Length: 248
Image (tube, rainbow, N blue to C red; front, side, top):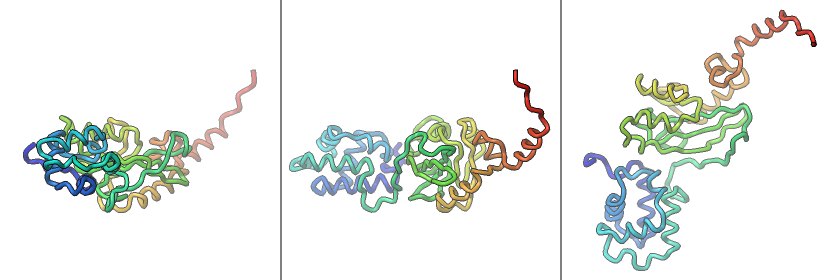
């Protein structure tokens, strides 16, 4: 791992920098060294979010921390650092806020993943994007229900399969590009990949998808498990030709 940068993303770096400031101005380089001593590289948003107050105390007391850095750090400051590590109140963060959602809140909706590197942008390639933005989309609502870090999947033996597993509860994945073998693994996970090379705002793409939910074309109807709009008229004509069943 010697060739890997210790911090995986801009978001993770922001959290660490703000945390060091709360810890009596602890030198960022020393803090990163202490984190690296405790955790595998790279330091990701997901890994930081799993750190507890007790973990943090142990990290600060390690050989890579500044001398006496733990002295004068109040419990409230330690708790504030843990909140930062979970992504709460990070100044300068472009990570979008997740909206409250429970299964069933949006009837007749589908779940869509967006390959992203910043904010709510569709600007990622499947094998290298920092995260997947997960949306629940109905004909009249779009909700961001989760942000799933993707960089930890790259530590797995089959990183494409690990990335596909992160979005297996989605029906559609929008991205800028994806290779053939990776696309096969996404499809195998039950997800339909849609390439949009030009990228753009995630919600603009989802608004375009939204327009087709009530009258879906065949590919979307198959995903939704409903009749395709273009074939519906033939179904109606067939129904008219079939005599009503006699009551027993």
